[in-house]
Length: 55
Image (cartoon, rainbow, N blue to C red; front, side):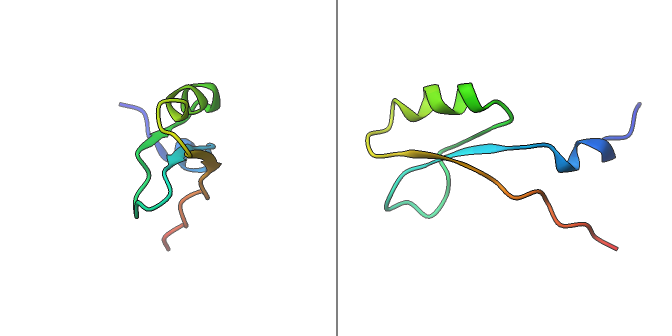
């Protein structure tokens, strides 16, 4: 089974709705996130920061 270490720095997009503490959707595809955002009035699509390296 291959290591998943190379995927830690890929872009991730999340759909955020005002008034909620957590994103309602997360995806590696910006077009998919934009499509999902259309279902939530007032939502926005934002890029997430890559995970911090441990060690």
